[in-house]
Amino acid sequence: MRRLGLKFDQILAIRFAVNVGISTTIVWTLLKLLGLSNPVWAIVSTIACSDPQPAEAGKMFIGRFVNAIVGCTIGLIFLGIGGSKEWVLPVAMATTVLISSLIIKVKAMWLQAPITAALVIASSIGDPTNAAGMNNGFRRVEDVIIGSCVGITVSWIMSKFWFIQREPEVTEKIAPMQE
Image (cartoon, rainbow, N blue to C red; front, top):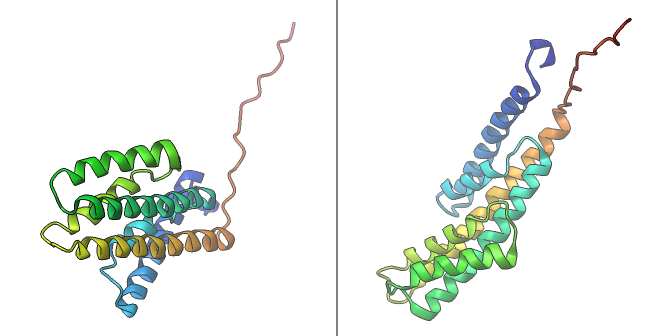
């Protein structure tokens, strides 16, 4: 790639595109074969964890995983407390943000927690048993875990097969002043 005159950032962008393409294909095929769910949520997670730099992919993986579990748990707790009453969603969102940002403190993908809680609670609206919300919560966490695992795995494998080394910065040397 260097021979083509591409810069480090351009090469990373190309590898990111390849990672996303491979990860999306794997997730889509896997979930369809297993009949688990609509693969869209897993694909969103795989994109977030397909970073061309494995260290960044790892941060996204941990963030998505932890915050999806936090959001699902809080969403389920609030469903148990208040069901699908109107006050539940805003109070659960505020609570989820506070717990995620002040107690859990996994900053990468911290928005995942309130998003997951909202999905769990909103899915139960109109269901007197809240079963739809609970089922949806577990499905979203399942999707996030599957998608995130595929994304980080592809990112790691690609980094081993397609090693990209940053070239050292070239700085112009200044000649010493001559008298």
